[in-house]
Image (cartoon, rainbow, N blue to C red; front, side):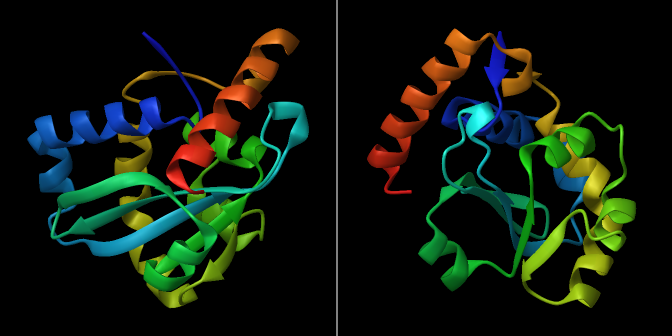
Length: 163
C-alpha cells in the first residue's frame, strides 16, 4: 500500500512498524527525546499551512508518533526542526544527509539547542529508515487532482486533530 507524505495513516503505520521491529528500539535505546518536524507551507503540494509531526522516544521506546498543534509543539517539544517539504523529501529519500543540510541552514532549528541536535544527528538515519519502511508518495509525484484530494483530506484531519 502507498502512503501519502504528511498523513495520519503514514505516521500510524510507521509507529506500528517501529513497535513491531526491535531493531529500531535497540538502535535508539540511548535516545530519550521529543523531536518534532515542521513541514513549512507549500500550496503546490496541498500543504496550505505549516504542519508539525513529532516523536516521543524514551530510551528507545516510542511513546507517540503523530501530528501536533503549534502550541502543543512549543510546550512539549525538546526540539523543533523546520524545512520545506521539498527539503524533507530530499532527506527522507536519502538524496541529502540530515547533518549536512542542517549545518548549511537548509533545515532550521526552531526550538531546542544546536548542541542537543548535533548529539542526536548520529541517530537520524535510524528514524529516516523507519519513515521509509512504507511505500511513500510525495505530493510532487501526484496529479493535480490527487493534490487537491490531499488538500481536502488534510483540511479534514487537521480540523479533527485540532492542528
